[in-house]
Length: 413
Ligand SMILES: [Zn+2]
Ligand SMILES: [Zn+2]
Image (tube, rainbow, N blue to C red; front, side, top):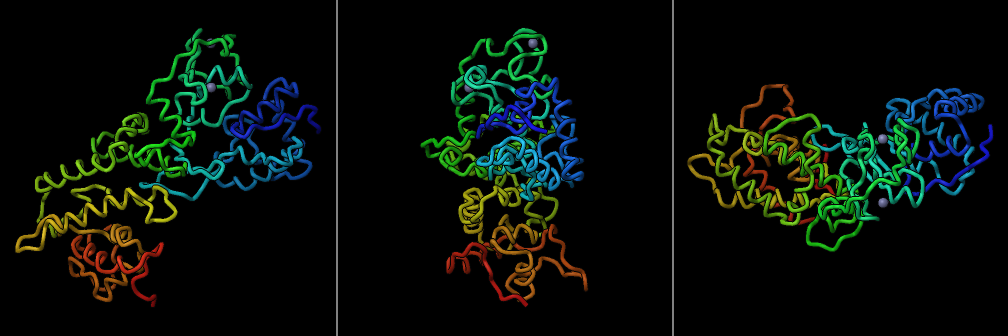
């Protein structure tokens, strides 16, 4: 097979958009015909790779393949030969799976080295910018991300529905960049200026550097920006204890002012939790898990994801708050909030060390267990076991002496 027209992929284009352009430019009647032709061509070289390329455009991207993603990568490497684009790898457009996990098992996908929460990808529809399409006919990768709602180039709101028939826009279903199923040319749609907050949010997602005191705006690492937005959304969901599947993902605009006022918002929330802690107690503080009062506060700030833990400013803010909490609540006859119990997982995050090191610190007597362990039973990683006070004291005593990426308190066995 030879493709007569071999358009160049755009650096900000989605993979589905480029494959659809190949299909349209080479006059295939539909993507189905193009994928049939691709499949037959691939079969000649590598039948395994051919089998890994789906016939549906919406399932084409690499992250949709779970166990067969390496085969799909092979398939795209072969397809690249048809496109004559030696200098630009087709896989640069792809979204791939990753082993990066956020709190509570939420996963990340990777696009050009940036970790994006998988739940941020739009599934059913893809809004468009009429002005961008007028300039160049392809779909921008950013349009696939849920919180990108305004075009940061043209400063207008993205168009989600056809102004003529009100149908949600989905180029993968209609196999057209410009024409809705009703025949309306989307380039002629009226344009609405973007609201200030939507524009800022889109600029955050697009990776624009914005001079600001807000960590969300000033951090240049896009993976961390996405991680902060997800952390914020999960944090708000926990606070209001509302649970709607994926519903919590929508209200992201307040994140901007939350990080503008960083860390005052978080301090205020933690103060409220501390002041109402006694109401939640069933047993005394020294028999109560930290999570009973603070939820997954510590666990949730572990995976922002920041490569070097000392740059995780959310974790640093939480730790500083807990250090101050212990200082303000000295040990007394009666247990107080500084005597809450941490699990092995929480301790390992606060001490920036491995789970094994936490077990080792316990066995060497640096950390005391809050209960008598059963013989031959290994302590579960989730069980509240160690006193917050002791962990913070150990951290303060040991941490300031060295500043490595991961703390190693004791030699391994
Ligand atoms: Zn635009
Ligand atoms: Zn329409």
